[in-house]
Length: 337
Image 1: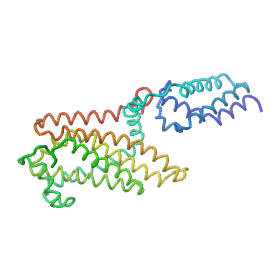
Image 2 (image 1 turned 60 degrees about the vertical axis):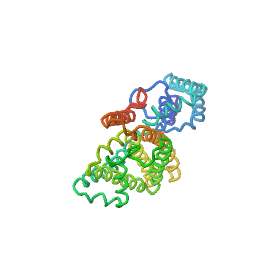
Image 3 (image 1 turned 120 degrees about the vertical axis):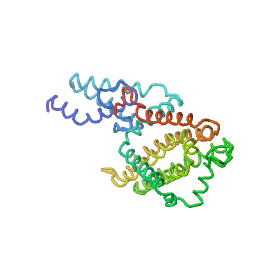
């Protein structure tokens, strides 16, 4: 076999691995390639595979040189090994920088990579919410289709503008106590929404639908009985991180369930491990968002002396910041999705 034919066979056999390495290196902050670059998780190469892949790359470079392959092939492998060496032997990134990179870049990219499930989760949450808000405006009894009279009475008591509230929207007055309560409650809902996805994704879909109905019923009912200003001024500040986190948790659960239903060429266990890793990283971001939401709810939303117009303005700012963060975070020159 001639050198040219051997080179063609060599390149055809290993080119996908080189492409995967290029994508992984680009997503790790190395020189970006032209065109759309996926995040490291979607390069076909996990982080823990890099050392073994790098060793194989060095072996392939040695083979190419020994067999006298073309300068194009040798130069490509030489560049990859040099970039890989810089990654493998560079000093470890400080922990705080890794956290900042995850929050500002890795997490938004991961959310966008799951855009199919994300949009489905948005629809499953917002459609019942909007439908229930409309229904409560058309019929005063619509709220009782999803809430008991006792629950409705409690909600009305919390947001009654004529009541003597030490703090809005809650029965307790201690900010730090309520901060803990909100964290426990919100994170519990988020984790249940994600974990329910193991039921073929249907559990997460049901959780999103039910939460949409419940929130729409509360919002619509309180607005219809004249408690709207009290309610909306309370929820405006923390609604963005809280509701967006709930949708992301539901989408993460759905993708986990769908992976079990349609694992492709992988075994169901492999699909569960792979998508479970993705879901776990999404849940870390969800956890951080819910902590932020709990902090805002405890120390800002419940303050009664702040004018509603100010709370509405801050709430709109949080919504814009949250959506821009998820839309633009981590793009730069590496993620051009």
